[in-house]
Image: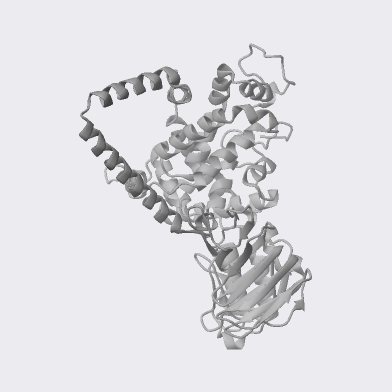
Length: 345
Length: 202
């Protein structure tokens, strides 16, 4: 890419040297070398499926159609002649039919435009979405946001507010504009005044929690349906909406920690272990089972600026909670220390 | 791709086979079709491979490759403002991949090949070597199970001359994250091979 960056050596089929950390992965170096070789071999099938010659001849037709002006002109005159030849009544029919088609078309566009847009990330996936007004939402894993297409209800008719619905966690950087910007979760409404903030909604079934953290500007947090509101007007203030209760009073936190996920980090503050594991699953896409009754675990606070390996986090959690973790086929499980000491990893 | 041997600074519109990529970029921006063809021939196989690595369908990958270059031609006059064309074209292709819904039909066409690769017919011994196409059908299935970021990093890593920094630039993430994505992807593929075709791991 950058011609000045030294290209990594991956000549032939050898495992590229710039891949590091495989020694901690399952499987031997030899297996990875064999895997790599197979992958490169399979690429040959892809290369064989593409012929630059054929592709170029397709493309050059597409980017250079026959001189367009002549053709359109002759088309038009042919159409004109046909129309002149047609009896007048027929022409009226045609006019009616074309109006009907236009109306149907407009209704179609209207219906299409009325459908909200939903953007969803899988577990372990992060994604940045630019909203119709230029505001940006960064989505953490297992998150859905929904908003009206173009922030309008019908084409050309704007909503009074720029309204976004969120499930999961996202960081918003909102463009200032006349229309207010609003984020709804299942139990909270956040009114926004040109600002950047993080919203995390957790739904562990019995306890719905929305946590709003301000990075700059101001926001207003309400519970849903209807409750008193809390105004956050200083960077680093946080308010939580727990269940159907009104928002908690502003409380100072470290914004960098709350939004650590944006830089590949992970952070929770005084959170029950099942919530911590759910957050890890959502962010890293790896299932983590809790093999201990939740009541026997403690709330905990964790902060990593960068998570290089999920196992490092699990090790710390196990240490604090007096447990151990073990690898399952597709993920991990936290289990009591004594129970199966013989199977310990 | 501005490969190592020809890293000399831009030659004045040389008749060489491989003109410098920035020279090409500039000539394309002045609507020079011959330069655009050269650029296409240099870059399109890599773009195709990149897109095909993310979508399990040759037809879909072909369409996206063509769309990408058609668009590149449309915006040619703005190309002079682009610093590095190659990452730029990769990103154009990448947007198209993410905007596209998977082509279910073509994936189904792969299934016969796939069944063959996982359970070789009795006539062939189980250790029989798969050809590149069968191998690819195997990997397609498993690569499709990966989160899209892992799939993307793994595909870019298989390009020649692409450092983690270059991959990070295309994917717009930190270079250290690139390595993590690749390691996780490889681990997944290795586990699948172990379960289904352990003979291919030796």
